[in-house]
Image 1 (spheres, rainbow, N blue to C red):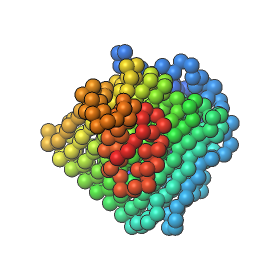
Image 2 (cartoon, rainbow, N blue to C red; image 1 turned 120 degrees about the vertical axis):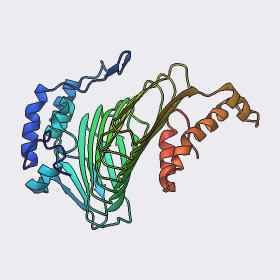
Image 3 (spheres, rainbow, N blue to C red; image 1 turned 90 degrees about the vertical axis):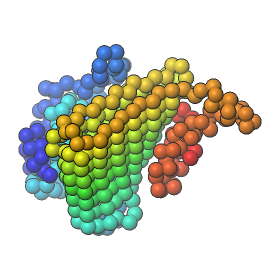
Length: 390
């Protein structure tokens, strides 16, 4: 798996060497584009990216905490061998992609490494507490799930009122027959601008389920990519978001089918109130080497007010005839008929709206077997756009 993208990886034997190379790239690169087509863009004119890059240079420590039971191995990239660094460190997220990613590689003081050894079934979840307390703060985690490993990861992202910028890179390598569920519950402070990049590569018969609940922050850019490299690999992505006021969600999920008989499903549901806005891009790409691939993508957004908006952009890039693909997008407001029906049970208007929203978002929560996480996600999402029940 480590040689898959050798042409675009950086050849470095230590984290210090990787940081030096990335720092040299920073002034040569552009910031990530926020323009996605005619009339479709994100306006962050008031946010000073160059100042943020300067603040990242001042970060001297990681504030991220990871807890896991033995035999899960928790370490840092500095502790790994040159062979490990060359194989994994930049295999999925490339420093030369843009200025922001290069800056994260260059200035993040600690790259956390989590390894679940071959055949280990982790009984208790791996728990990550990611709290941004500096004005600008970046974190990076590299996961390796060896053959036959099974685990659940729960990550909670929060920020203090002092935080203006938070970024994160997650790279996950699933070896054959590894199985992972990864929950992220994001509840940032009102003025935080968040840039999240998540990428995973799956070998044969491996499976990965992402469940992301996004509620906090002024701006959230969320970019997730699954690479189904091995035969029979399966990736499922659930994205839930709830926003109000002037919140902006820039969501981009992608599944690349490269092996035979792979399966990928991407689903998203969100509720927007006030002047909240979402741009949701989702892409399925199926290579000529992927017969028998099954790909599904679906997004649904409920607008609570006339000023809320959502742009949904589905893309299918298919290069094999023996596949099954589907996509759909739904955008709507609470209908008067639905309100009348619920209010006919003796409820007032506010309660009727809440019940409809609860059913809309709650359906995806029922996909989760962990009841306590359902309740936690309900609480976070209920802060924005309506409360959630299932």
